[in-house]
Image 1 (spheres, rainbow, N blue to C red):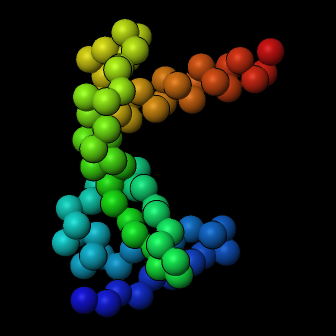
Image 2 (spheres, helix red, strand yellow; image 1 turned 90 degrees about the vertical axis):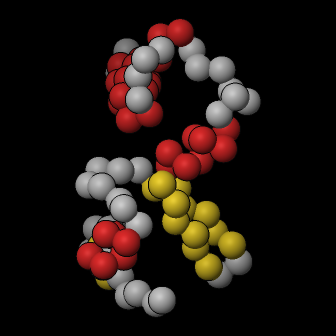
Image 3 (cartoon, one colour; image 1 turned 90 degrees about the horizontal axis):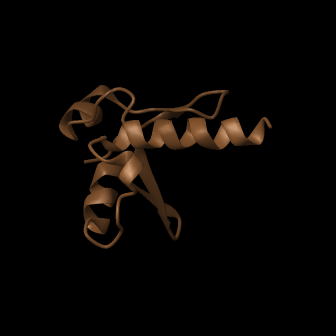
Length: 84
């Protein structure tokens, strides 16, 4: 199936509602974008994490957090250090 998306002036892409629903995506969900030649493959970031599961140890400070919580905590720590 082929879909058409629009790129806004802020370089944001709006996915067609049917595609969004079909893929089971949620607002705020992270996507991994892979370029293959002149094509792009989009997949939920969680799927990429599952591929790595078991090959990368989770730091103790991220124990019992889901991926979005880990990302937010890591970003906060990173930018806190940058402002010093």
